[in-house]
Length: 367
Image (cartoon, rainbow, N blue to C red; front, side, top):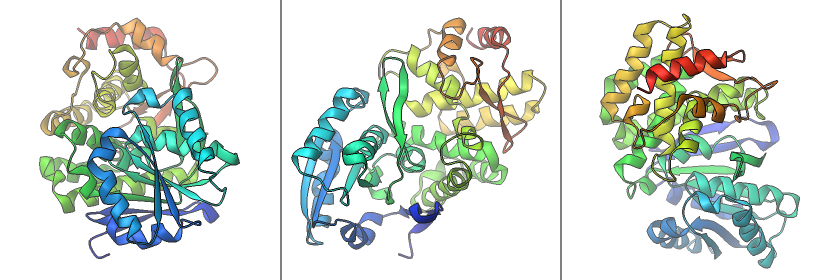
């Protein structure tokens, strides 16, 4: 366990560990097996992840004396739907899953959200373990208990808070990821630093692209997860401070909703959104211009889009983007809520956004 880093998510009786590092799954597989009450593991995954990783995971689990059942879904956001949820739940019921059993979500954010929500609602709640296979899901979506599916009204509009029993962030599962997916996940590490950890941002600036070396990446993931753990412990159900974790996401979700399907990645949209949040904060007079410049420079250095014009889709309309922002789940009393910043490591929640001012700001940034 010496090469692994363990971060606790402190939630009383529902506390759990996030185990991070190379070969993490092999090391903790005996602990995983202890959670399988009927001597079987039910794995929910998708076709692409199954092709790369399912055989290896099954080998580790069968070596612990478990039988393995799999539920394999089509890849992509289309599975994160009512139809996809019904498919997973029906299969779990076909397998006569017990309420004291623990299922395994093996995949990226889509599978983690879908399997976690299926676990939350099947027989009024079964346990689950997250084994995230993307950097984005290792840093963000696998931790904190948010589960859900998409609807025609937007992403994650139907869901539940349902904490996993364990998260295994095995860096070995990232070796099959394209560079673009790694960068997308890195955006969430930067996000944690920009919200409340200026020292982490300083270190990320200095290390640059070398952050993707194994040891440095483990430490960066652990720092971001530890930050999220503190926020989740304070505000598990996002009624206050946890909304800070959405830095860049209000802009980012609008970009994702307006772009053609699968043209831009979530982390790319969030990166451009974080740059906009800092620039808008500068315009409002609450953030030093040099801090926004540092954010933009780091995103450029690492290879993430620092503005809307650097996303794979570039045809944006300011009013349509703001209209998308009106649907954001953080909004209160019909007004757009934005996560803005007084500087690097000092984000805050702004609930009194002037929509016309926001439109005018975006019009200058989308040219």
